[in-house]
Length: 349
Image (cartoon, rainbow, N blue to C red; front, side):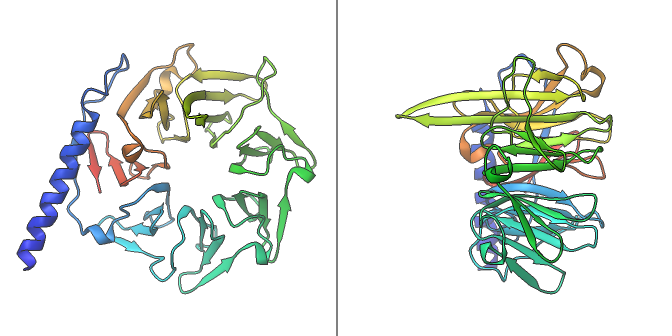
């Protein structure tokens, strides 16, 4: 009986890999260069793998990979996955953060946030002061405050209580996607509406040289040189028609905004070499890509960009997070689980 189950599992895995390869065939036609990449499937037990939409990926102080997925938050130690939220019922997880004390914070789509000290969970919702039970991003600032990007504003937790920032305080929109504190102490907020920064007193909508604000920013990072990178991809459905809108990938050097690429960027990271990586829709009708912008040409008028992986369709799209791990590998999520790219091979978990 056990052998039959193993055979059935292998058949399912090989079928999924075949479908994946077939779905990508013919859709990678592009003028962009591509790395020569092999693909393999990691042999592991399906029930112990984050086999649902992976929204964010982080790495803890011990080098473990932390994965926030719709069906749980997992820890990967290099050999096996552990679902650390197996005792929590139902919520769809969107983000995970290890704070400076080694505790974990978990954000959910509609169930508030959880705090985990390694032994037990503490649950925070609007009853405890959170701005909204929809929490999509977690960030720890320089002073140790924990920030939550929620559907009702930005919530800051100082270890005792919450302080919420909303449109009443100057935020242009209460639906927050992401939060970042730069080296100067300025806080950047990507919202479903206009993006802004906060200097501790005032919220200011940031605009390009044409005076246009940046809408629906989903990812903001600061690179090693102090530049701020941000971008987004939007697909809107109006009256049965699909409209593809993208603001592309932008860079702010402290005085001016530069459009780096027209390609969508819903998640952005910088690796150890200074390369910029993005995931997001790059063409209409659900064409997505994991892209790498070469550090050597980042400041050129047309920086070199390489598509590491691309495809079409919601069920295969890496709408989730991307991580540059300590060993140089790139981890990224998609609707069905998790990928790892080591520079030569893409591993499908």
